[in-house]
Image 1 (cartoon, rainbow, N blue to C red):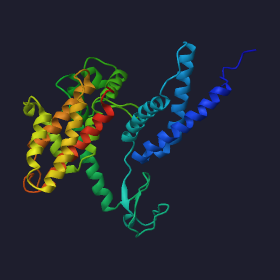
Image 2: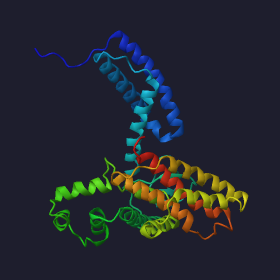
Image 3: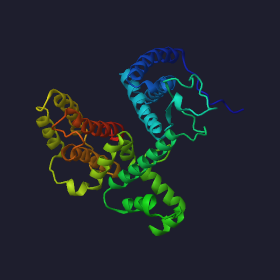
Length: 338
């Protein structure tokens, strides 16, 4: 009779698992306080970290090595790696519309929201509406998607990948994946689909240019438009030996205009210092994309003046800080661990 493959834990392992679980619970609580959306995944994070630690210790004992000396540090690293994966999946999920309750059409009800109230609620994806608000939001979403596509193309260096995305997003004129594959190297439809997934990403995996789309999606529309223009003119602007230091100098100078300028400059310089410390190397397409985003953010700080000129009003620096925040966030998420 075949023996069961289910592993039986010893009493000592069960005691250790209980201790590790208590420690993992405290770690999860600290992470959830910083990122409230992780509350839904708290139990899974705790279980995965404990199981991974027990398995690692078992392997080390089998190899006649001492158990891991810092269990809390090990579990924290496991959780953070898992959180990165969860965050990437969360970014590519469908963005559901948020509407005021009084904008809901007759006959559409949302649990816990009364028509006429001033609260906000997620609108069901399958609800049928013909309101003006939905029409406006739909147009803005189309505009945003167009800007994201332009950003993903512009952030790529000159080469085959850039040409393929240009044809896929703007010049394909209805070409199928098979036709696109034939046009570029005689690839099959499956090979072209895999190639595009590697560049753009899918619902379950990230692509090389995905950070560009995320940055644009986090900016206000006017700021996103200006940032995409900077990306499109990247090669003409890329003349500085040290874009980060130049942008820091610009903000340090602007800090003397007023107290509002000083506060915004402090925030922007902190982001630039972070980017300086975590600048990726130039190996691989993903790292090259991140470097171009970082440099483009610096060019934005130096080149772009919004409606309120940077010198006249401290609020004119808010768009600069917003761009730096969005870029530093994707660098934190996508840059290789050092």
